[in-house]
Structures are given as C-alpha cells and as structure tokens.
Length: 268
Ligand code: 1GP
Image 1 (cartoon, helix red, strand yellow):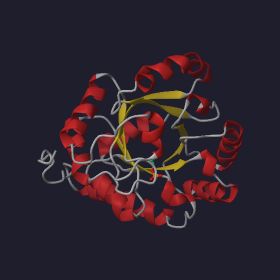
Image 2 (cartoon, helix red, strand yellow):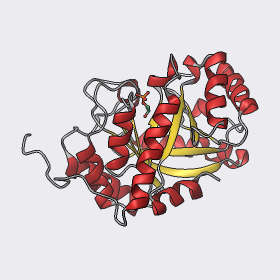
Image 3 (cartoon, rainbow, N blue to C red):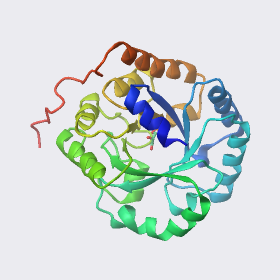
Image 4 (cartoon, protein in one colour):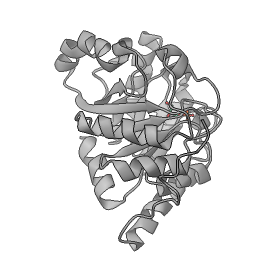
C-alpha cells in the first residue's frame, strides 16, 4: 500500500522521491536504468502518466518497468481516462481543484468509477492544484484551466484546505511538466501551514537543490519527470539530497517553516 507510506512520511518527517514516467517518452534502456536505481533504494515511488498517451505503448512499457522492479510501487497519474491500467499498484484519483472544469472535478470520475472498481487498484483521492510555472504547460492547455498565480499564496492555501475539508487524502501541487520555475518555497510553506495532509510537489524540479528547497519548505514527496527523461545519471545525487533533508528533520522536533509564509504578494 502506498498511502500508509506517504502518511508515515508526513508523520515522521521522512522525505520521499517519486519519478514520473511519461509513457510516450519512455525508452527501454532508460526504464531499465531507472528500475535499477529504484532497486538500489534511490526511488520511493514511480508515477505513470502523461498528457497524451498512446495506450498500447503505455501498457507495454508499464509491464516492462514492473518486470524490472523488486518492490517499488507504480502509481497511475492519469492525464485521461484512457490511462487506467490494472498492472499498476495504485492511482492518484485526481480532482483538479485549481480549475473550474467540472469534467475534471467529477465528470471523468463518474465515467471510470465502475472500471476502477473492477481493477482493484489502491485509490488515493488527490486534490490536484496547478500553480503557474512561468509558461503554459501541457496540463494547463489540455485541462482548459488557468493555474493559480505563483504569488497567490492565500488562494493556494485555501484551495488545498478546501480539498482537505472535502475529504481528499493528499494534495499534489504541480507547476506542470517542464515548468520554467518550480513552485516557490514560500508558497509550499503557506500550504503546508494550512493542511495536515501529505503534500506532493512537482514541476520544474531539475536539480538536487530545487528538490531540497521544496522538501525543506514542507513537501513530503517531490516528483521529478522531465529532468530524468534523457539522462538519469544524476538520480543518486538527487536521492541523496532527498535523504539529506529527511536526516535534518531527524535532528529537529518541529520541521522548520520558511519565513514569510503568510506574506502574500501585494501585487495584483
Ligand atoms: C509534472 O510534476 C510533474 O506533472 C513533473 O514535472 O516533468 O517538470 O519534472 P517535471
């Protein structure tokens, strides 16, 4: 089960690393190398999904990845209802709370509810928030929604809190794949201060420093996709940065909170 691990990470200050694989960009050699890194303890979870996915290819590569993994789970992070696959361990059942597209808040969920029930995946109801990452991303375009502006900490925090009050089990804030700017530590901290749920952060994290900054600000798990697609050689260094933040949390009783967390920008 994936959720108990996430909840435990939240409770103990342990930090987690997820690697996102877009099935359309998957390559056999890269998948094998990522699986090897995961088996060596450098990856906690794989996420599987993309904005546009050719279904047969996705199923083939997902099987291949699973065949090479010892025990690291694979969680579906679906960009569409075509991306459900019983080969995975679990699914982030996303409600796009930052948008006002009712299809992505409830419509698609109704379409797939029966299929999901049959698949017996572990289902994690996820409040999904898009945050502006400095340029339009596939997910903002495909979802036909506007991301929350990057300096509107109060709106992000209230949206995440509403997700918690609606019964979501975790919050995933995403600047979108290939974002120019990752979500700022101050925005992460303001959301962290408002909610108790596990908090996942992704989009534009392409260096160990960016990973550490997100985790120090209050993320429980970070997601890296784009930055590992062509070259995964730096994954051990990235994993070391994640563990480094976990160990720092071992030494303090209360996780530090970034300064000025309620300080929403006065602009706009
Ligand atoms: C996108 O959060 C993920 O949904 C990962 O983003 O590909 O930029 O790492 P990147």
